[in-house]
Length: 387
Ligand code: NAD
Image 1 (cartoon, rainbow, N blue to C red):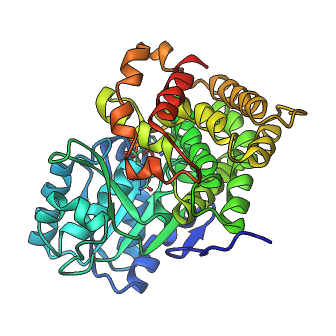
Image 2 (spheres, rainbow, N blue to C red; image 1 turned 30 degrees about the horizontal axis):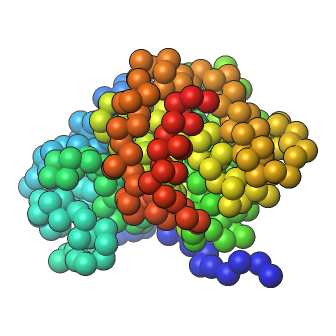
């Protein structure tokens, strides 16, 4: 019998090279007349903001450009932008950028029609103990990296001052526009770690409690596409085929993990990224081999299939051996595209192990589809450092 579960796709996605030029008409069809176009300095310099702004203008939608989003969505930036949004009377938000921008856009869409208290109460919203007084205004997400899949996930990952950690504010997007042309300006290193972020979504979705045959299908296909196309996209950023496949892989990995969830690797990546100011994708890439090794104890067949997709040619049926071989293949793959290991980044093993208390017991960590003990978390963190 196949495992039962709920299939989810939050919002329609317009996928294809050149589709960013249709943003204006899609925004208009959602009933918006004046939107905030949210981005950051790097994306604006790369030209993506101009493409979307022009499209909005052609559709007769007024755009207030706010390109001051910052890495990992600090809550202060959301409050500042929402104040502008209220003063300008916006009725929608268009996010054009990487995950930091897309999450900032989502959070602005929730805070603007409510108030800043939403961010202080983020945990209450995440756990369903509180609902928005006013629903978020429409959010149209246009990713410019191939990594987060945030255009298809229900949370905005916000850096909370009050909680001193990264936490998810539930804000489902209204529409996603995935145009790989916009990703061609992403530099090689950012291409590499954002690609490994998408890989980590697919990997963790396979072994989260809520995984379904549907989320598995998307996850395995994302892994196959990333294995084939990430090295090409890193090597030759203008390769349309590789960029397109990576954009698709990122989106379907996002749909997969929005349905199933992510777990231990993301719990650790959020803690490590927040503590040591490392890019999210770098932390995910470093945690992924250890998560595979651990998950193979409960899911040997899936991790064997993953390892073989990554070229490991695993013959053994022993879960520990499967885990080690698959983990090694993924670690070598991440290194081959230029993602450095924790120790190469100057972290000590003690620094990595320090997050054990933040990870064990965290809801994300405990959503792994099997038992996780405190000792397991310590061993996973140690494996991530050593492998
Ligand atoms: P990012 O958005 O932080 O961007 C990294 C850098 O790349 C920035 O300097 C940006 O200016 C630059 N950049 C982006 N697109 C570019 C382009 N086309 N050309 C040139 N430069 C470009 O990086 P990211 O990895 O996409 O996002 C990471 C964030 O996303 C983290 O905060 C993470 O927690 C969050 N995230 C959210 C979800 C979700 O479901 N909401 C999922 C995964 C990650």
